[in-house]
Image (cartoon, rainbow over all chains, first blue to last red; front, side):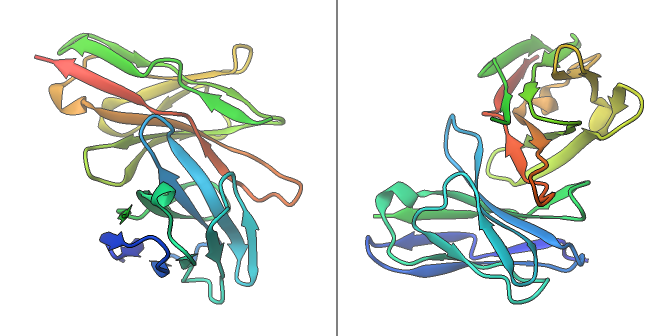
Length: 111
Length: 116
């Protein structure tokens, strides 16, 4: 039982490059979400999904896209990376909001 | 607007002393409340949650939290702090939107420093 798996763990991008952060869970959780963590700002919600085919925006969605084609996977796409997107990204999943399991995070640096 | 506040950026306590990390919330309806801990360069680990029932919730590693509806607070407590408790602590509240989305909103985090 792997829980929530995020890849890669570390990534350096140049401004303007694109990339996808991967998130997969094997707990059959219907709810998945992406957060970014910045010093002094806690975790801020980027996008979330309540099930396959359904996504919605969180607090800070600009510059990020998501899709949910399967229950297991919830990738986060950066179409044109900017230095302001330098952050640590966490994926989380939940069973009806009663408990949330977090991945180990992706540390992204945009230069 | 629904929100969570952790009024202290840092809490310092001596090992063996009791500790309290404060959290207040503002949500409509009945809240689901959570505490998470983050050790350096690690992900978030679940400590405890309040959904309904007894206002005193016991969690992992000897931590507990008290739900106070009148004061809209959910403070984290431990009777005797350990140096190994030093970490970043997050309070979070589940919000209920029109579609019952269950979004989890976090406070800013409180760094707990336990000194020997």
